[in-house]
Every structure is written in structure tokens, then in C-alpha cells.
Length: 277
Ligand code: X90
Image (cartoon, rainbow, N blue to C red; front, side, top):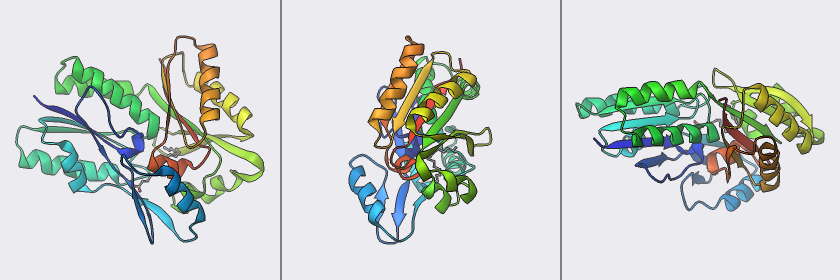
């Protein structure tokens, strides 16, 4: 029985060891150029180009064919997507599932709407790898991963919500205060999979302190935590240090956003995926 994990590139995981894995790229598009969120993309060049570009910029999600290719001929597929509340990605994956199962009787695809993105999706991928490795059957894995997903969270602190607002992913009212006078927004993925602001914080140090507080309030007790940043390694390491100080045994990694999350989280943005158990 050949298994496969297919996950869109908003997870910032362009590859994964120890399990058959395919990343399905989203794209960053302007009227003149297109950047594919895949290995080899020069992120610095993309961010510089976008900072200087005066026209419109947006993103596009993978289509049904892209998902079908990522299913890779496997018998059993777990497809994990960015929140369906903010992207058409999940919808395309669901359509691809229907086509795939019809064209290949006996093969099965489970589409998981993360209602989140970034490092929370990375946690889901890691758990799937474990469950697949344990030799459990497809239905059991589905039950267990869905249960796990009720115990994972995404929080973030961002310096700018311009690209989110310009592309209709957050209300301009929420976006307005962010970035002015060093105000950072601290927020979380809501249970509906939308951006839910929690606090406005003056300065990065305060934002990080508040973030740790909010993580604890949400139930973080020293389990897995995945931090990614967009061109802000200092803040990511500072957050990591604070978490390690309070939870010396925590399972923590720090990484970088790839193109899609870099576009929306923008320079300085920090995203954290964590478990509440
Ligand atoms: O379909 C598309 O073109 C992709 C649209 C994606 C829009 C949201 C991306 C969010 C990236 C930014 C901060 C976290 C917000 C999380 C809310 C659930 C990361």
C-alpha cells in the first residue's frame, strides 16, 4: 500500500524526509512576473522586487491538475491544505480527490482542511508521518489526525497586514493600525480558519512576551512548537529562548517562511504552530 502526503506550499515545507511527500506550490503574481513557491526560488530577490513594484500583486492557488500530480500515483493520500476560509486551495484538492478516486477505483484520498497555515500545517505533516510509519490503517490514521488537529494552534505577530488587506484576506480596518508607530498585531487562526486579532502591541519585545502568554493561555505546556519567520531570525530566536527558558524540554524548531507565507506575513513576521498538550 503506497502512502503519500501532499501539502500546499503555505506549510513552508518544500520537502520532507522519511515519508513520500509532495509540496504543491502556490504562486505570487504581479502583472509582470510570477514567483513559484518551490525550491530554488530566490526569496530575497522576490521580496526586493515586490517592495519596489508599484502595481498590483496577489497569489494564486494550485489547480486540480496540480493536486492530481502531487497525489503521485499512491494508493492512499493525505492532502493537507491552507484554510479554506482564505484560499481556493482546499476546494481544488477536494475536486482532485473526486477525480482521482473515480479514475482509480480502490485508491483513496483524505483531504484535510487545516483551517490554518504555515507551521500548524507542518505539525500536521509530522504527525501524519508518524502515523503512517506506525503501520496503522488509513481510516485509523484519519481519525487520529483529525483528533490531533483539535489540539494544534497557530499564532503570529506581524508588522504589516498590507498584503493581507490588499488581497481581501483581512478587513482594512484591522490592517490599518498595524505597522504604524511600531504597532505589531498579535493574532491567531480562529476556529473558522480566519485571521483573528488578539492584541496590538507596541514594539517587538512586547509582542513576543504577549505571544508566549497567549500560547500558555491556549494550553501550551512544553510540547511541539514550530517557529518560522520572514527575514527576522533575531525575533524568532528570542521567542525560542523564552520558550526554552520556561519549558526546557520543549520540542522546538526555528525555520523560515517560503514564498507564500513571506508574501502575506511580510518582512518581520513570525508564525508559531504549537500543541496544547
Ligand atoms: O489562494 C491563495 O491565493 C492563497 C491565499 C492565502 C491567504 C492567507 C495566507 C496567510 C499566510 C499570514 C499570517 C497568518 C494568518 C492566518 C490566518 C488563518 C500567513
